[in-house]
Image (tube, rainbow, N blue to C red; front, side):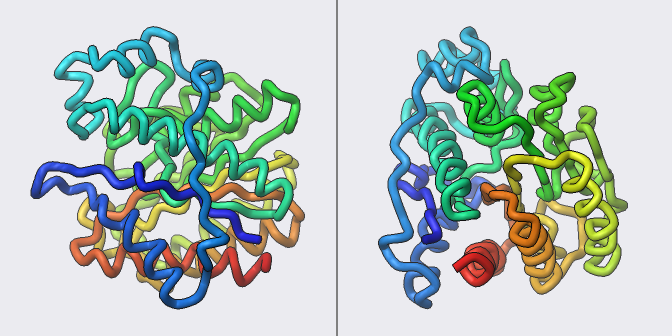
Length: 300
C-alpha cells in the first residue's frame, strides 16, 4: 500500500500575499481522493519527531532557540516565514513523516511525504522556507540505528540543496546529488557530491537527457540502500521562482524516470514534495499529483 504522511498541521496560515502556496497541502490530498488515486487508508498522521532524533542532524543551540522562539529577526527573515510555535511543530511533524516513510519504503518500495523537501535548512540555521532538513534528519536517523549503510539523495528541486550538501560534506555514507537551475537561489552554491547547474530556461529535452545521462551511473556507483527523492515542481516554465522551462508533461516524465529506475533496481525510494510556485494553484497541484499517481501505478 502507498503510505502518505499528511497532517492538519501541514496547513499553516500565512499573511495575505505571501508567495508560498500553503493551500496546496489541502488541495493535493483532496484531488487524489476525489479522482480515486488514493483512499483515506493511504493517508496517515505522522505525529512528531523526537528531540533526540532531530539532534542527530541539527545543533542543540539552534533547536533550543527555535523551540523557545528566540531566533534573531535576521534569522527569521532568512527562513521566509513568520516564526511561531505552530510552525516549529509543523517542522517536527514533517521530519517525522519522512522518517516513518523511510520505514514504509523499505517495506513497500515507496512512500511519500505530503510536504517536506526542506533542503535549505543547515544544521545550525534555517533558510528559504526551511526550518529543519527532513531528508538529512531521516538519513542520519537510519544510519545511527543501523537500518542502512548508504543513501543517495536525488534532489531535483529547481534550487540547489545547499543545506543538505553541507550537512553531509565529508560523510561517504550519504551521496548528495542536486540538479538545479544555476542562475537561481541560493546565490552562493554549496558543494554537493555531484552538482549539475542547468542553464536558465532549459526545457524538457535537455533536462531529461541530462538526468538520463546521470542517474543510472549514480545508482550503480553508490549502490544505495535507499533513495531520497526531492520532487519539486518548481522546474515548470510557469513557476515564479524557477527560471527553468519544463512543461508539466516533462515534469511528469522526470518523475516517471526516477521512480521506474528505483523500482527496476529494487531500491526503496522516499519522496518529499519540495517546491512549486506557479501563479495558478491548479498547475502546482496537478504537477505534484502526478508524482503520487506514478508511485501508485508503478508499485501498486
